[in-house]
Length: 134
Image: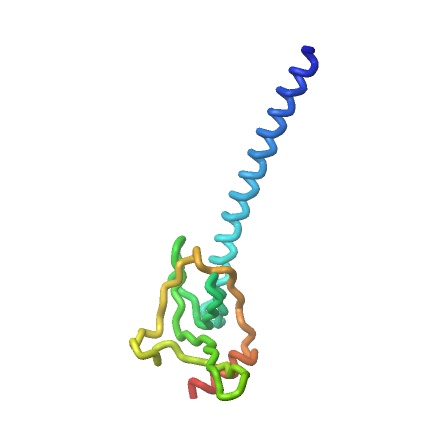
């Protein structure tokens, strides 16, 4: 009987250690994820694609980062417009042309960022942005 009781205590200890390790691993993952988001914005000369949790993607230059917010400027985004046929047309839109007249800068809450990607200098989107700016 004593042996069974000892095994139960050991099993509880194993579960406590396992749960503690999982909590530590998740905490480290969150810590390093935030670090990676900060690290990507170091080059202010590279345009960045910011993918949000609501499905929206913004293209711009990142600056003025802190723990909670990323500042993006010179912003473009893709808008889907319905055409008379059954297909959608994608349009590149410069932030600021909307009816409510926003400035060309936004602060994005890091909690809503899925991931960030530096854009190649001559990607299709980057080339379309250059054409739109001229």
